[in-house]
Amino acid sequence: MPKTSTKKDRGTEQHAALLETLKARFEANMARHEGMQWAKVQARLEASPGKLRSLGEMERTGGEPDVVDHDRKTGEYVFFDCAKESPAGRRSVCYDPEALEARKKHPPAHSAVGMASGMGAELLTVEQYHQLQMLGEFDAKTSSWLETPPDVRALGGAVFGDFRYGTVWLYHNGADSYYGARGFRCSLRV
Image (cartoon, rainbow, N blue to C red; front, side):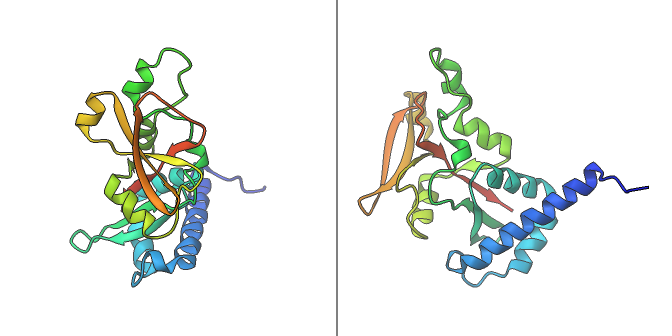
């Protein structure tokens, strides 16, 4: 009698495939994490199945997550979405659930903050976006929503960034706006 695959077996296979993808990306981009060792990153990932699930969602939606920092105090590794352009599976979204709720005409399907929360991750901050841009040129054709200060959000706005003309640009838009070329990038600590 042939053995049937169980849900646990499929989950194990998916985790193994994700770890292989992350390892290959880690090894192909050593300049992003000089001095770090994959074996230590993998050990943290295997000890945190919830975080591995979050990275799986970041990968599934086109983020191409990779290690960009190591917090020596906590031992955590920091992952950012490192896709060259804003992740394709996370575009055409407004900023947050409040903006989504407030938009009565032609609302988008999701919000950046809502999707990130559902993935167990957070939007990049302005500082993290600058850190990412030090590792390469990202969002040369797209833009990404960034964590917005509460005082700006209270006035109806939200912050996004992109890279044009050799420069990182930060700008604002109404939080309820959405565009086919604007998505969001996540960070995750493991």
